[in-house]
Image (cartoon, rainbow, N blue to C red; front, side, top):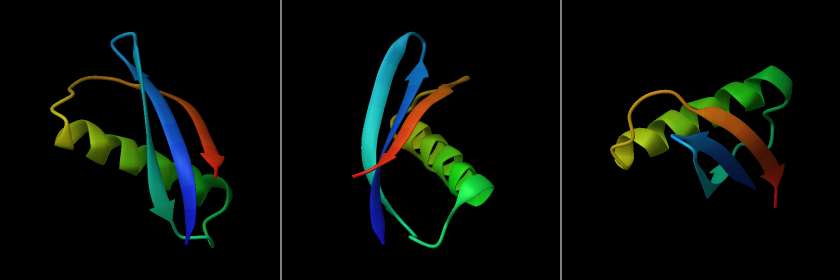
Length: 59
């Protein structure tokens, strides 16, 4: 497992969180997993609508 900081913008507010992700994910699979984690985060925090994924970094 690797820890990643994922950042996104929703309604002009930037959010970021840290998530443990499988270290075997690369390329498109990693990007898809990040987008899924953003959607889960938004649902858990009652955020609705569109978002812009602004960054992802291994920490």
